[in-house]
Length: 130
Image 1 (cartoon, rainbow, N blue to C red):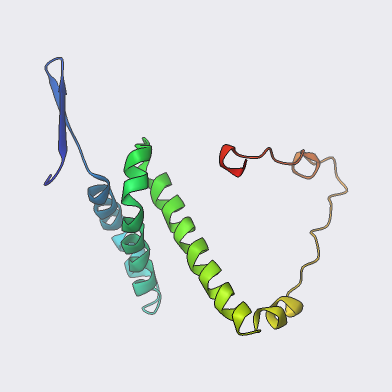
Image 2: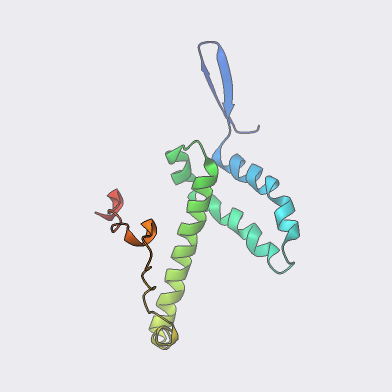
């Protein structure tokens, strides 16, 4: 692998791929899925892997055993940032209020059953929420 970091210790040597290489390998593994998508969806799917590269530094810093988790979180973060930018533009144009008024913002109904999902306590704040 080109650009891989080699770690050696105690006679054993292994090559650790870079996060960019892991992205490329994942994109390769998902080629059949991409081909199965409608033609108009394929470029959007490809851009997901391209946008993940914007978060290489954070994913490398995390150095998690499952790089797909970092890729999916990178995609979610990127989508959140892009949605926020669109909402700001719509809000500045006075359109967001009209859209929000048409959206159904009623809370989900509570379950009548003794359901662990319905009865669970509120989630605890994450460390970065404080």
